[in-house]
Length: 228
Image (cartoon, rainbow, N blue to C red; front, side, top):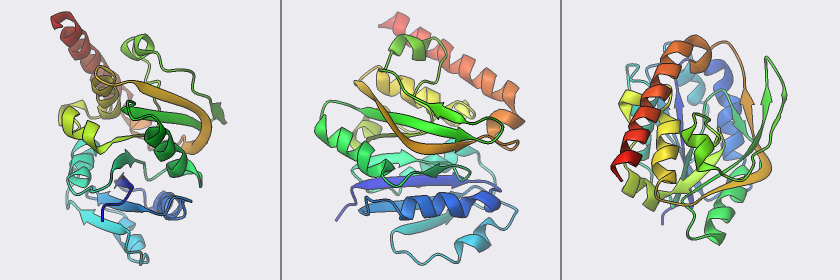
């Protein structure tokens, strides 16, 4: 029987953070889940740390070489069997009711394709990012308003297609734009997630690459809208 939720966790050299991220998924109040960890060629002790887990809901895929987040996500979702899909980062963690709240929001609103929630942020700065009602114009204007805490339907993913490997650094932003062009998107004020600022995030280590990827995504989105 398919689980209610599939969670993909791509990771690359985040052994010092990953156990907190994994534990936060396995300890969710919603227990009907599968967790698929995709090790994207880590050279630290990540794989050794994963060996301590003995949970039938958890699967580990080792890619052997670093193929970047979009490809790692696609490898994970190719094996996903849940009705609702999400992914999380190895350096962040979910609060206990995260999956239950997001899944319930989708279940109660059959027409919604993507739901996202508010989050804490810690590290270089600390606070709470509270989500306002979804505004497509802001997303098209360059703001990744969805953020790190989200869930969408497996059926939506089948229609929209996989993450784009050419959009490394903005693969999530590209996906949200593609979903939002076809489905209603719902924002929740519930604070369900913790995002960790530190010096090894993709945004911190490759800001020019991330900025360029986002600009390419926006140009493509604008071209699609003009053709409609």
